[in-house]
Image (cartoon, chains in turn purple, cyan):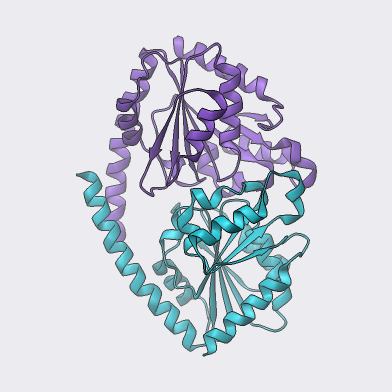
Length: 223
Length: 223
């Protein structure tokens, strides 16, 4: 019985969330701000990736970054230090995901009207963040080589709902049992529309293709 | 208002869970079964670690293994194939943690009376599993070198509630910016009682100390 009650609340939470997420998406599209939600497990390299990306884009785009962490402001500080871009830390009181309501409240505190690009660095977790629409126009996930090529089999929802899957830490592939072609076929089986790119956020390998993809998304948004 | 309602349910869920967890712990202690809960982020090497551990212990202990995954039976199958020990897969319908009720239901299906050691391989997640007492006598977590030495700062609850923290994939430390002494001091600051051991589940480095620790726990349980 307890389970039924919890599930009903969960359904209603999801419905409210989807409505609010759509509102965020529409508002940001109207003002020309591309909103990207970046997800991964812990330690996959999100912060290094975003620092690298923002540094390459900041001269041609006005960028805002929202960082989510359970307890610290470490990532927000790091991104801000490395890029000079203004970064806003969202503390989510120990929750395991970010939903549209949290994004919406952060947007109230944050001037986004003049931004070309707004990036949300989600919580390091392959389960819960995949369940909540944040209002982003596109979802990106990072899977790092040391995590293993079986992850699409074990966390399918995350791979199903992402537009871009980045295989990160490619510079370490010779030290791990990781089959790039196998992981690619496993992802495409779950999500035939997914764009998959091998990168190393640390060395910069493959980042130019990520930047091309972002410019393509900007064009689509303007349609 | 929505938040308040959810939080109240959460408190009641936690209270029920703690009561049931204590019952599991007492029952398993009485029958002489040491129950270990093993947690980590995705891809930290739990399955490789457990296969290695069980292979070293199976000739001197009767071991059962419970494996939790959202969608697949991959890990249960892998542990079973590699060790020959009977492994039970718990599918948790997309939830992000395992609680005492799920363990309790699994125990009903599973004969544990003759076991010396029962191991739960939790879901790959550094957030949610730390919040739910599973009824285990001891909690173990793996942090792998590629995940980075900042993880205790970012997921403090997980480090606070573990008795043994294993720093895994030590064979790859020269390829990553990972400061072992720093991570150790960060963990001890959160949890001065934690035992911290460097290992490589893949090469077997450091596994003998994990086995010593398990024998020590068996002795404590028999007191």
